[in-house]
Length: 342
Ligand code: DAH
Image 1 (cartoon, protein in one colour):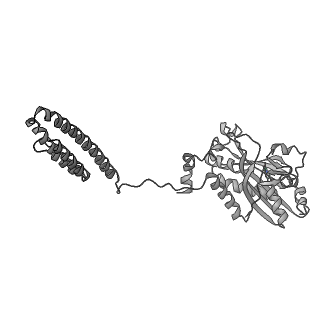
Image 2 (cartoon, protein in one colour):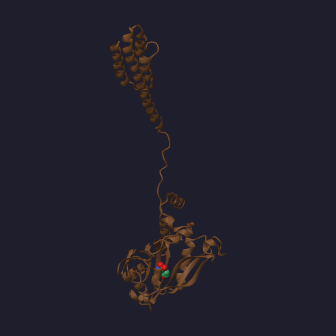
Image 3 (tube, rainbow, N blue to C red):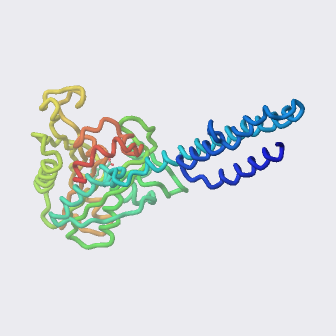
């Protein structure tokens, strides 16, 4: 009898290895454990014809095999179920995951918009270095070492006389040194200042700058072009205001504001209760600046202007915090999808 049990065990092992699916498994169960003619069931049945001594040994053996078979069948059943599940979840007819395409950053969008506007007016795009010398960043712009205007432009010095530019105005000098008038140029790029990061300041930010130097250029050209530009960029604003200001490299100088579209110029919390939002600085190029680049201020005049790109984008799109531009939060960036049209 003991040999018979061993035979059944071997037969079971062999048959188990050949099972492919649930049906095969059930057939195996019936073949070995079936109530009527199951191979092991028959052995267990026949135990009663043995002597008590033989029954004890063979019975223990057969029952152990029964347990074993039950465990093996259960484990195979679980494996087969897992496989079935996998097959069911692979549904090739389901729509695939959405493929999100990228798009331009809001700062790139306004930058392209501003540069494009001036290019259509005959201004040429020019680039300048972010690492500048003190000469181009200050001295050539009529801002000598002891000038108080330098305090507002405290920046990062890499070595004596070499710094990260605090504005894009040095590009004016580089272009005028290179080219003879007439000059119509715009530039755009990263600038640096020793400012702590908060809702409206960042130590790294962008400026957009323009320069037009041509015989006969006067303040009305400046006023006309800037007004035209602001009406284009901020179509929702109804008024443009020029107020006297001071910059060392322009004379006269002006600060330009647009009326707050939130309160229509009446004054509210988003415009600091002034009714206006300051946008840019501008003025007629200072004769000393023209002289420094070898132009004759008695013959030639020009105007210049400069502004923060982040500020333009914040006002244009209603963005409350400058830090949002740099955090790369996809939820923020995707709000510009419609503007780009993707
Ligand atoms: N560079 C100035 C600044 O960063 C802005 C500016 C003012 C630029 C007047 C100009 C200008 O070209 O004419 O504060």
